Amino acid sequence: MRRYQTIWFDHGATPEGGSYAYALLPGKNAAAVAAYAAAPGVQIVENSAQAHAVSKAALGLRAVNFWGDNKKTSDGITSDRIASVLVIEADGAIQIAVADPTQANGGAIHIEIDHAAAGVMEKDGAISIDQMSPAVRLTVNVANAHGRSLKLKCATR
Image (cartoon, rainbow, N blue to C red; front, top):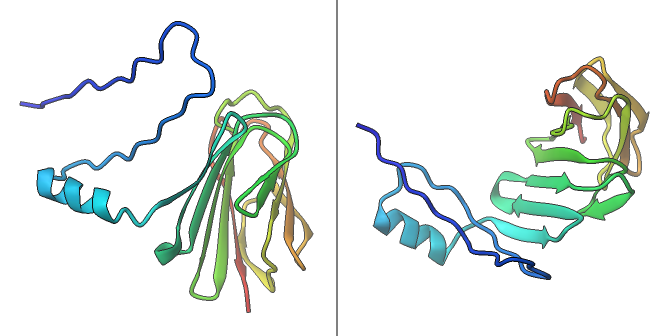
C-alpha cells in the first residue's frame, strides 16, 4: 500500500509579492526531517519571478531555473532564454547541463558560467563553445531536444 500526502499553500484569489520554498525529502522520518530543517545544507540563492536558484556548496552544485526570455544572471549563471541550468564544480572539472523545460524553444539558449575552463572532456553535439575563459560561454541548440538535458564537461585545471 502506498501512502500519499496532499499539501498546498493557499495563495488567495490575487496574490502579489508572496513566495515560498520547500524541499522534498522522500523516505525521511520525522527526526530526519527535523535534522534537515536545522541544517539544510542547501542555500536558496534566489526565489523571484525571474529565477529560482539554489546551491549546495558541499557538492559544488548550483542550479537555476530561468523563467523569462530575457538575459538574467543568478548565482553566477546567465541565460538569455527560459532554461533549467545545473552546474557542478568538483574534482578538477565543471559539468554543465542545460534544458528547455517548456520544450517550446525551437532555437538556441546562450549560457554563461562565471568560471573558466581549460579543456573539453565531454560535449553534447548540440552545444557550441563560444568562450572558455575568463568565463564559459555556450550556445545550446535545444531544437528537437524535447526537454532533454544537453551536457558539457570541462577540465578546470
